[in-house]
Amino acid sequence: MDFSKYLEQKIKEKEKNQKELQKKKIKAKNEEIKNKIEILNTELRNKGIGFTFNIKPTQNGDGWEFDLPLNVLLGPKTRKYCNELWKTIMKNAGIEMDFADEIKNAIDKLDNYKVTMKINSSLDKEVGQGTISKE
Image 1 (tube, rainbow, N blue to C red):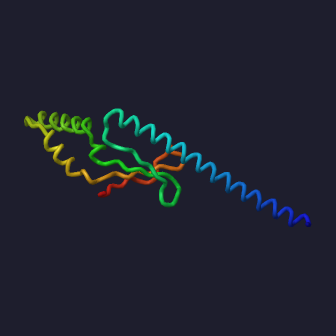
Image 2 (cartoon, rainbow, N blue to C red; image 1 turned 30 degrees about the vertical axis):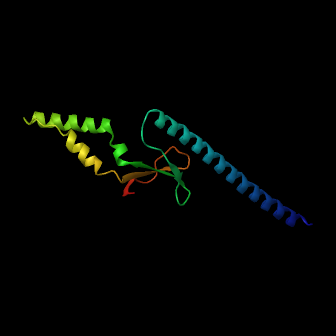
Image 3 (tube, rainbow, N blue to C red; image 1 turned 90 degrees about the horizontal axis):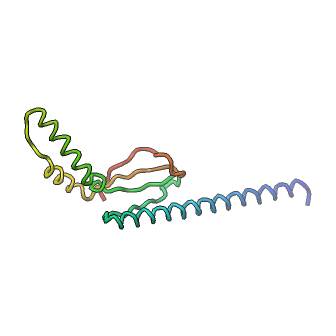
């Protein structure tokens, strides 16, 4: 075998090994993410939160995406905060009013809607913009 063919063969072997190594790294990262998500979901169950966190690779594989139901995103603390804020604004205008029931009724209508967020493959930066869609 002449040297150029030997060199060409070694380059192909190196490229093949690099691809295999990259696949192993991606698989290991996916397992790490899966384990972290399972820990998070266990914590959510232990706290009595009726929500399971699911994360999956984006269609083009450049990152991850996850969904969050709007009624979870706009949970009791957010509802209370909004109610208190609006009550204060109205009170300053001389109007006594409570919005808790209206906020609850509005958010109950969002039951089948979700926010989808995307993050990069390193899990350290938001990618793009969140979207809202009906399940």
